[in-house]
Image 1 (cartoon, rainbow, N blue to C red):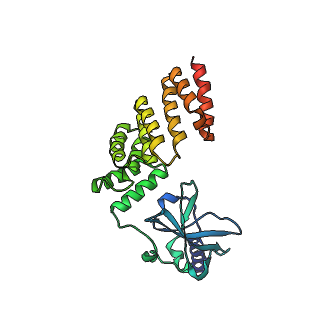
Image 2: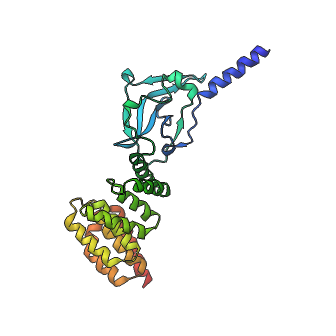
Image 3: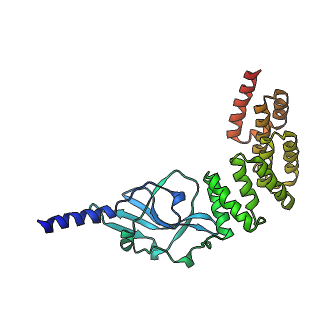
Length: 281
């Protein structure tokens, strides 16, 4: 009887160890072997998540796995166990961390060959900047700011650092800090569209609308990248809207409505703002 009970509990243990619990955010799984939710036929994509020095948060796809009725994992690795590296973008998808008890079945090691992964040195400015940028992209602005400020203490002129730090400040409504950082960044790179966008945003939110308009017009002349033109015009219109300044709202709208209409999302919000402004009068 004791032998039967032991066998029963052992079977439960083996079966349980292969269960995948999809309760982890992608952002929290750096340096972990993970599986993504089932897609078809009981198959789960599995691989390793790390921060690539060029692509940012990355999934090294190793193949598919399947769990049979007894709880045993069967792996279907890529040809010759090759890896495919896929950048990861903001998503609400929850994934599962693969238990170490299943590594042998999958023929994987806790720490993959670091030579095949473009990883950063712990605590380096490259790591701080990369993770700060990732946190910004995923909406974790407080965490981003803390890392980027640490990076700035190492080298405030590190490429791309100023605008990422300013982006964090702007989203945390620390506009004066953003302006201070962006003024210096514009001296070095006045034609950068992203820097100009964040500067206009900060100026609007500190009620410096005339300065924001000057920067907007200057950016039209000097920035080859026109990605943010509609967004910049919208920020200024929004500034007049919140001030309930109908005269300047209508004036700016007449000058830039065609530009803003190129962005469907902005176009829809502008129509709502026009209605709201009429109702305020």
